Length: 470
Image (tube, rainbow, N blue to C red; front, side, top):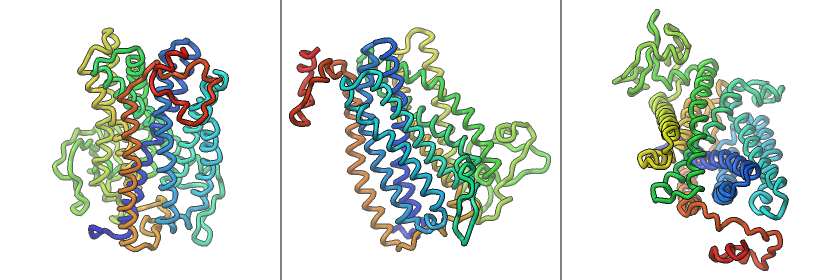
């Protein structure tokens, strides 16, 4: 298809499924923590607004969680179908780590998810809150194992190679590999930011439509305050992650910066914009800030770091791609900080809900957290190329022996299935968000005694039965 090789088709297929999958766990991680905060505030303050928001966002969480599980299964199968040589080489590392994720995180989430979603007024308030906290912790544990596995592929350690196969010799070193702490913190913070922008955009949409109920104001305010904390913190984490990447994957950093070679005795400028040319070994049409590259990456005004010309051509990442994905991530991050500062200023003036310009900006920024997350992930994964396990196994050696036709057909099938299944799920989530939180949809106080004869009879056709019960 399109004159692509089997390797290129396999990479596109995995990149497509991963891109679809990663947005759902990110929102799941953020919403699970948000729900735990909402229920904790309700138990503390007894304010019904928090309870209403909990029930509103728990519906969206349930849909998102389901899509995340389904998309994750498809992605996991590709290790065996499209990347069997990688599985043969490093399956002794990847297999146990993904198994630990299922045995700890997924079972924990699944065990308490039913209580969290359907146990309101069926169990005690504290037990229900405990279930919500366990689900939130489960999402973080899941991220931990997944990032441990992926980070080992970036900075492998704690292994030995026996008969051409990786054998783990130190699981602590495998899990806590050099890039793991930074990548885990960066990913979890990105999930919190993406969710804050998602929730904030929902509140902004209702504010712009004239809905200024206490629930809408509260979720908009909470989202903006979360950004005030998380957006600047992500800058600090990103700086630490960048320094770690420079230490262990300098070619990736050189490609991200479009940096080809050092001039003896001169500092490295920061290239804001340009067009990296892999063949000519230069970045064309550069717009630079003198010495800022040295300051950011070496924390000195005259420091230098390796340029791409210091690495063999066959070992260089594609700078023409990750130069721009990195700038998309950073540029959107700066806009997120701007939104946080603007919101803080509006709160200081006592008019956080009256500014339509702020609400429009928050609405526009709604999807940018996920866009930045994907851009960062592309930067990380494409920047690792041409290695599937950095320095140990090339991506070309990891792919299964499939024909271009087979991979083309399966890619088309995936495109159609994902568009229909997940398009429907995302559309349903957007429909729920447009409806907004409704205090009348809270479970009635006598829900403990309500035993529906059939599943659909548990749902009221209108708010009338809820009003009567209350």
